[in-house]
Structures are given as structure tokens and as C-alpha cells.
Amino acid sequence: MSSSSQPKFEENDELETAVDQAISACGGDLRATVRALIVANEYLESEAAELMKAVSRAYARGRFGSYSG
Image (tube, rainbow, N blue to C red; front, top):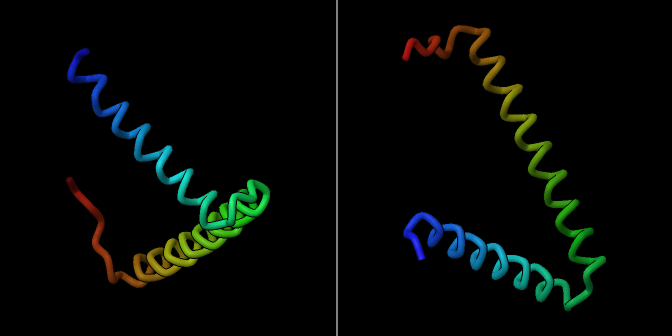
């Protein structure tokens, strides 16, 4: 087995563990798990949108300089 394929398996194992934990947290109810994940995703999307607005306002007010690399 090549070393480049090893991280893929580890990543997959972590993902499978996270899936199992999410299902377990919802008492094994798959619909409840999907519902909880959708709600969590919507919350994170709204938080990201608020942060983008805040950064945009700060940039427009000159609080951030442009990145020159």
C-alpha cells in the first residue's frame, strides 16, 4: 500500500466516526440526524454571512489594508 493512499483511509475513518457519532447523538433516528445537520449547516451559513458583512464594512472603512502577497 502506498503512503499517498494512507491519509485517504484515515480521513475516511474519521468521517465514518463522525457519521456514527451524529447518528448516535440523535438516538439512531436518521431523519432526526439529517434534520439536525441541516439546522447546523444553516446556522453556520448565517454566521459566515454575518462575518463577511462585518469584514466588508471594516474593509470599506479602511480598517484593513489590501493584501499585496
